[in-house]
Image 1 (tube, rainbow, N blue to C red):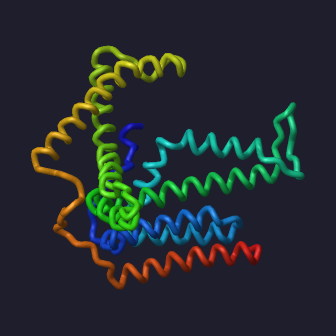
Image 2: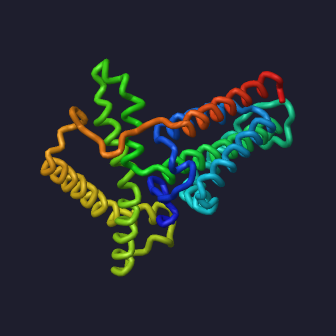
Image 3: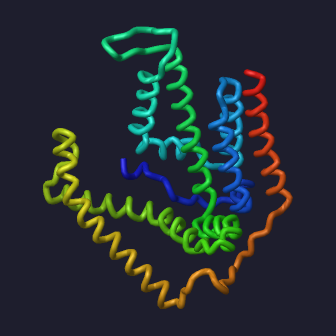
Length: 268
């Protein structure tokens, strides 16, 4: 299961999506999420699915990598769908047992919520798969630059988010090593009740937290030894520039959002 966690990983490539400005990709993700949560009908969901499939094909990222990233979140997705399935009120009742009622409206809402969460996770994962942490930090900082006028530490916030995303694969790998070492000493993480499994994870969590704090301390020392002092006066080797392909991509994103809104207005 730990090996299926792909959040924060970057897969280098030379596709059109990889070459886009990170600011373009961040804005496209925002437009994509807005359109996804605006969608209310089967047609609008088909439009969003087609947009996601085309984006993935252009990026050359394999679909199995996106589905692999969904595995650790299956329980959360299923739990959300079940809540919408049994706690959505409606007039067309399928069956009712005690206070538990299943309606066609609940089935429709649960199906839409399930598809929405899957597409949301796959779309956001595509951003991290095709954008390096450094580019993502630079793009986020440039987008949030106007907030500097009200004394918001934009550079520090962008740096913290980038470091957090960057160290997710590292911590997953460290967890896997600690679990393997504990298994070699006779630890059992796969049998027993859920409480016994949670208790068995205690010998893993303690060294993992110690390792995380040690890595954070080493990173801070490394940044200080290189005279890092924040974003003030900082230069960049690669200066971000919006090109024609970026503006065309943003136009496509706006058109997709507008199409979903029109479909909702028309009731299609």
